[in-house]
View 1 (tube, rainbow, N blue to C red):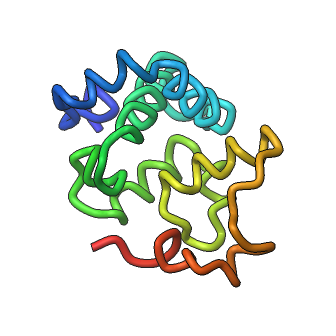
View 2: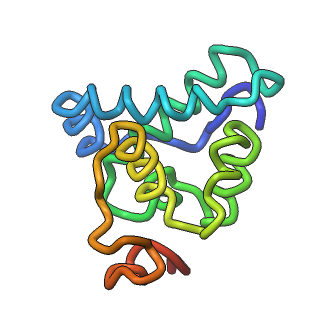
Length: 133
């Protein structure tokens, strides 16, 4: 990926504004990612940079791959499997990545976020899982 882990990413002014308001949220997502980082990929600084960029992009309004200015969800999946393989492996149902990260944080805090006893029977299933065109 060259000298920088995500050379194409340039935060929008709106993301930077949200970063100033929601820094604690970014740190929670960043921490989750770093807990699952592959220590054999990149330097510690590279892993921290990628985790920070992904966490910041989670504040965007589009799908995470779009907020990261990537070409496709497949490219995002490859990036996450490379840098954070243990976390990516937990997304067995192909949940949309932002929802998946926040669901992981909610489960850690023992906060029930699903409206139904399981995702399979939730009325919002189509919003959380499936294609992102």
